[in-house]
Image 1 (cartoon, rainbow, N blue to C red):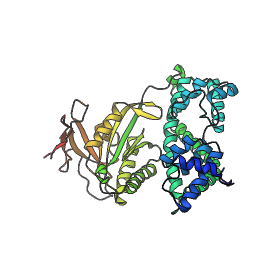
Image 2 (cartoon, rainbow, N blue to C red):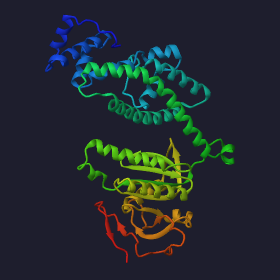
Image 3 (tube, helix red, strand yellow):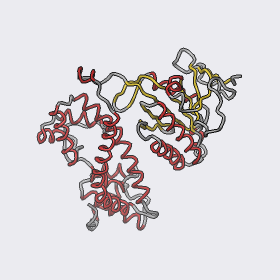
Image 4 (cartoon, rainbow, N blue to C red):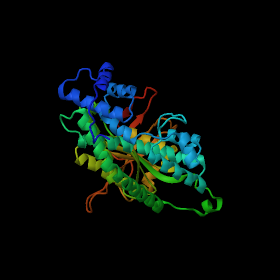
Length: 408
C-alpha cells in the first residue's frame, strides 16, 4: 500500500493541519507524518479514523491494521456462504472481538474461508454450542499468540530514530512477506499437539456404549509459582519482569514432556497435570531445580491427586482447587504433596512429613508431605514419617494472613 508515494496536495495538507494532526512536528517528522496521512487517506481512511490513530499514538501501525482489516459485512457473507449472519457474529464475539452489527465491515478475505470451514463443521454434525465452545478456546489462545507475535515483531524490526512513515512502510512490507509463513506454522503446531493428545487419550467400552465421554478422570494436578514475584515488580523494570515470567514458562514447557502436560501459564505461575503422579512429581522437582540453577526467584509447588472434570482443554474440581491451596502453603524451593500423591509414588522419592495444614475452603486439616529426589546409592535416607525438618502447621484465619508454628 505504501510502495508508491503520491505527491502531497496542498488542500489535503491544510485539512490535516486544521485537524491538529501535524501539531508539534517539524522538519523530517512533519514531512513523514504528512506523507503517511496522505497515503492512508488515499487508501480510504477517514479524517476521524486518522485523528483517533494520532491521538492514540498508533498512526504508524494503521497501515498494517488496515491491511488486516475487514472488507465484508456479515450480511454479505451470509449471501455468499449460506451461514447465517447471526452465527458469524456470535462466533466472532466468542473469539474475543468487539461487538459488531450485520452491516459493519469487520470480516476480511481470510474470514470467508473461515466461515466456509464453519459451515463444513456444522454440516458434519457439530452442534453450534460445541462449536462455540471450541471458538472461545481458540479465541483465548489466538489472543495471547497475537499479542506475543506483535511484541516480538516490534522488538525485532523497530529501529532507533525511525519516523512514522519508515515504521509503517517497513512493518507493512515485512507483514506481507511473513504473514503467509504463519499458516503452516500454526497448522503443524496444532497437528502435533492433537496427535499427542490422541496418543495420551483412551476410549472406554462404556463410552462407546453410551456415546458419551467419561464424566471425570483421575489426574495429578500441580501448580508452581514464583515466591515474591509481586515484590519484584518494585525492583525490576517491566521488561525484566516480563523476561523472568517468560523464562518460567519456557522452563515449564521444557519439563512437561509426556505424560506430563502444561495446561496453562498464569503470570507468575504454571499449571501441570498428568495421569501419572510419579512423573508429575519428577517434572516438578526438575523445574524447581532448573529455576534455582538459573538464579530465578524461588519456586514452590503443590500437587494433589484425584478426580477432575475436563472441559475446553482445562480441568476443574476439588483436586485442582486442592493443588492450588497446597501451593499457597509450600515453602520456597519445596514440592508439597497430598497423601494420595505420596501413596501413589511412595518408592520413587524421599518423603518427609510436612504437617497438617488448614486450607481455605477445606473443612479438615490436610496432611502434606514434601517430596525430594532419592539420594544417590549408598547415602542414608531418613525413614518415612514425621521428621525433624517437617515444614509447619499452618492455619488460614479470615484475615487471610498465614500463621506458622514449627512442628516439634
